[in-house]
Image 1 (cartoon, rainbow, N blue to C red):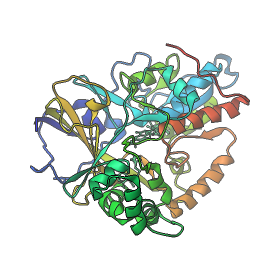
Image 2: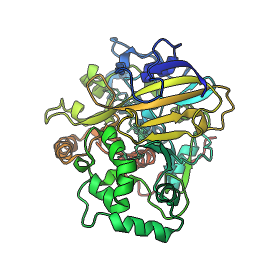
Image 3: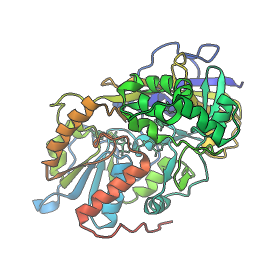
Length: 445
Ligand code: FAD
Ligand code: UDP
């Protein structure tokens, strides 16, 4: 194992990778020595080097009203510079609409953001692999970057053994030493849950039976979501393919890859010619920001938009710890899952394996799931029945606002992958523009 050169936690530290002063792993690499707080967004350093992006106007109000006071300066104020906001802004701008994007973070790209460190594109907020079967979405993304041919094939540790994911003939062989699909099916058939699954536990037991559930799903899921799988919706586990072939591809989609040069470079191209204000929190002067545009596109948390009037929606957060390690290859794979309850983190990511990176050092990130306290970033909506009920109340209120559009993972309170977000933004803009045909993907490179 290579020597650890530095350890850092949270997105702030990821940008800095400070020298070692707080090594947080126990010698055996298992468990977590101390709690880590995720820094508040406004303490983050400025995002460097993007000349197109205006810096924070701070407390000084923007003076963007059109000369002569003949209406708002913009057609759309877009709150959130993640994939939904950026896609909407790009396509609206292409259609001749005037857009202003704001984000409270110091960088573009939302959770897709990458930071170049030691020649390695670090996925600041966890592994992001782009996959889709939608050719229009794939072509749209290719306007802004070339993609490599990376195929996600995570490994999973459980009780000292390494398994292949998603659940496929390799996994079945590793677990049961079976060789044929028929033998694997017999194993599953003998132990599977029969009946209509009503939660994640029953769904998993119904798909793959007890052995895989207890080895690879139960504890990982409990760590990830902070609750037992029987208290979670069934659809979450259906994200993972189940196949009876020797195929470790984590996704079934036709197209898959990582943008060469990182997601931040992709977003820079996507936002060319569009006005962006970072470090700018919509809630610091909401009436003013709304007054700048005919419509507001909001991609933040929907319950926050309505002052939590129906109660807080639950989100799951993550803490990230990053190690800079003096080794060319630390774990041999981009993603390794940790399925035991005794290991506090769920995943380790070795970023250089997303691209064929020849660097002599490597950066490895551990993901620790957390409850989403107010000082943490919300990453995953927790779509339990109670939360879904509360969300429906907010959605009704949102639908009654003619000049506000609610889109993206936090605003639609939905477990959306990137391609789904792009498609949702495209569809929403299309209905805005009342176009009958899909928006053209075009080619700018
Ligand atoms: P976000 O990226 O969250 O953007 C919302 C933006 O709004 C943020 O930048 C935020 O700062 C800003 N904002 C919020 N409130 C305000 C405010 N009041 N004022 C100003 N700005 C505000 N998808 C995949 O397809 N493949 C993957 O491999 C994958 N891996 C993932 C791994 C992790 C750990 C996570 C958390 C998600 C992953 N995803 C993946 C999903 C992907 O991140 C999302 O689909 C996508 O980023 C959602 O984009 P968005 O614009 O809806 O949200
Ligand atoms: N999951 C699991 N074991 C694994 C990987 C995933 O139990 O090794 C379950 C877990 O509940 C997780 C869900 O499957 O939340 C979806 O997994 P995915 O990899 O899609 O999660 P994401 O990348 O969105 O965090």
